[in-house]
Length: 178
Image 1 (cartoon, one colour):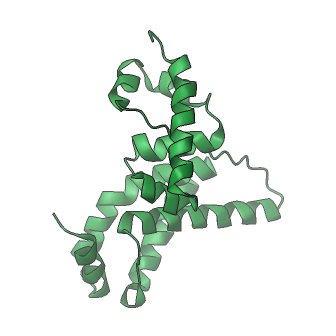
Image 2 (tube, helix red, strand yellow):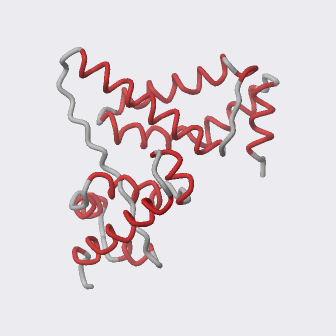
């Protein structure tokens, strides 16, 4: 298993194989995360491609003080927010839905076993307030740790935990056969 430090150092040294590895590990996850902001798959892909291109172009000077995963998610969030700000400035109508929020549940598998299709998952998750839905998806779907979610969203770990508990309470009422 290659460490974050090895990836960063490999990129700094211009190792294209390390860059490909980074891209393959994170591209789909980051596209899904960007889509939550932009609601447009092509735009999400463009934003992620731009981020990887910038990492490669600025590789010799790149400084990452957090985990690589947190760094990438924060970069995506910032790029998406910049994109939305530009779109709003240009008077284009985009609905920004920060759809993802998290919940802290002892067994996340119970939730997914109780639901039979992706449509049902989305329907149930749509019942959560926006921020809780975002935290939920980052935790359960993307597998991030509370600390990483807190860094990405610029909130405290306690706030992340509170969102998870509140989301669980809401979702536990919506789960079938519960």
